[in-house]
Amino acid sequence: MFWQKSIELAKEVYLMCLLLPQEEKFGLISQIKRSVISIPSNIAEGAGRNSAKEFQHFLGIANASSFELQTQLILARELKLVSPEQINSLLMRLNEIQRMIYTFKTNLTK
Image: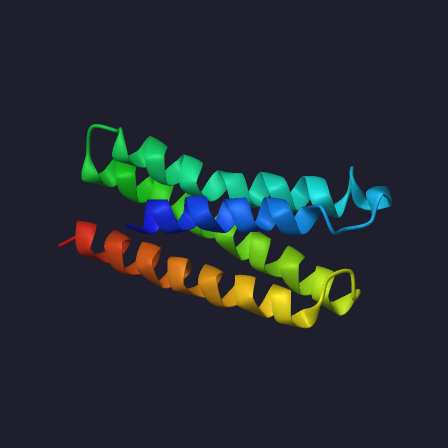
């Protein structure tokens, strides 16, 4: 379920990137896109591994990418590149995914 939510978030973030100034194409936009796509990609890669320990490792990478994305979205909001409402909505969805990843990762150790 959190993989699907991260795919939906990635779509929304990609659409938000269309609103950012073109001069950010090789800066913030590039970083945001790399971070957001890393989340579902690492969840999928971990799910395809052979052990719970390997899955945990990739969930850790996905979670780290989510915190990178969080920082970049906050920066976009602080720079007033996108409306605070739109960023806050994305941040709330991201926070939900972060909690889901953490819970699932914790349950893998049990």
